[in-house]
Image (cartoon, rainbow, N blue to C red):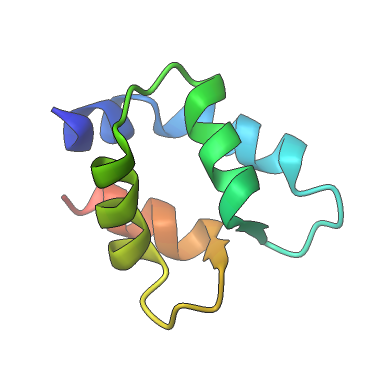
Length: 76
């Protein structure tokens, strides 16, 4: 299940997130976030990704905050 993959890979995701966040702003664009997930070998369909985005980009600004993302994942 995708939720368990996200939880299990949260440390790897942090490294991927940091690597892609070259401006050190604390967030990634949607395309960079997708790449971070893929680089951690987290398999997801387009529908799964849509659900992830609606959960972690609630204000729909096209940015995923690492702190919000990891906080939500660790409380699942």
